[in-house]
Length: 393
Ligand code: NZQ
Ligand code: ZN
Image (cartoon, rainbow, N blue to C red; front, side, top):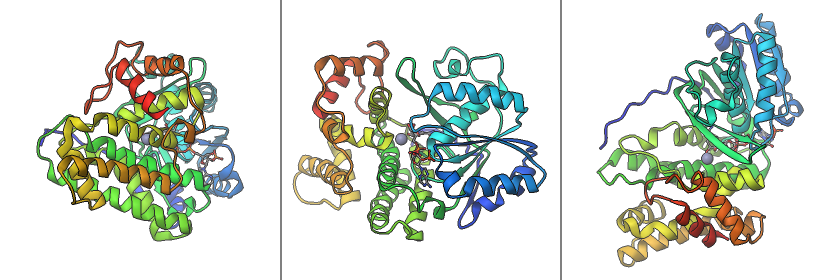
């Protein structure tokens, strides 16, 4: 097991009515002027936003709200929000929504705490983030895990670059997680969300670290089995509280860092997928399943025992040689994505068959013009990225 540091400072309030604790918890957090961030209107329609605003105001807090965050959240929206939050003298940023809203809230917090710096500088790495404002999240969609993660992903629409920033400042102070708030998510978001959750653990299960790490392996395997089962139940009935609870809990555990302890993370498919979302604006979870099978077939020979272990522990595959089991595990995973109606290639993703020039451009952007190698299970240079994209095409 490799050495690790692990600090997740987020206070999680989980269960029915969790959002009703927002006023009390924000007050305890010394919030006075709360800038609320939300998306395209689902929380207006459900009445959730109004309830939150009212409860905060009744507790003596000042609020100002800004909606309009789009999936694959845009830098231009964040820049506007930063201006408004500064003018409002915000001391706390509260997200009410899914991962895009939470990531936009994080970015708004960073920009507001550093008014002299253009917020994108933290994402392109030209300036190191040294301070931010506290962020809270009322989660309405189980998927990205942003409610406790150290990451925030923003798209610079001027360049088409979708980029993540990892920093401890991204860990929210508070997360309010009521599974009932996820009953209204569209089916597509449900399956994209649970696939993203699965991928956050898959991308930590297959890494370059070969040392024994039994507890982390077992946690990861249990999480994957749980998500697969709960997704099948949730597809049948999205108001199944227990299934939606398992999914919500798994979304947090999958991306808070727990399933990488003693190991590291790889995130090859996230890097490849972000290029697809940046260029074609496709939903995040779909961008991942569209490349996972191609990635797995391309790389599994690097560690056949690991893929065979995954096949046995997650899918119960015990027949055949080690390599046959490894391949059967990949096939089962791809078949599962198809079963729940997730795309497993570019055509199913809805972007059609792309020309070599596009595959080159995607790979170029993924590897910073061929200067960077990403991931570690199988290091991905520009040529490798082209080949994986070609398999998915
Ligand atoms: O905008 P509204 O109207 O709220 O509708 C949203 C949006 O259209 C809708 N929705 C959310 N909750 C709902 C609901 N509709 C009805 N009822 C509800 N309760 O769902 C749509 C998608 O929302 P979005 O926030 O984009 O989804 P998700 O949570 O999957 O977030 C995806 C974003 O997170 C990033 C992704 O790249 C993507 O940009 N990620 C962030 C990570 C992080 N910060 O740690 C890690 C992930 O790997 C990921 O990259
Ligand atoms: Zn993800």
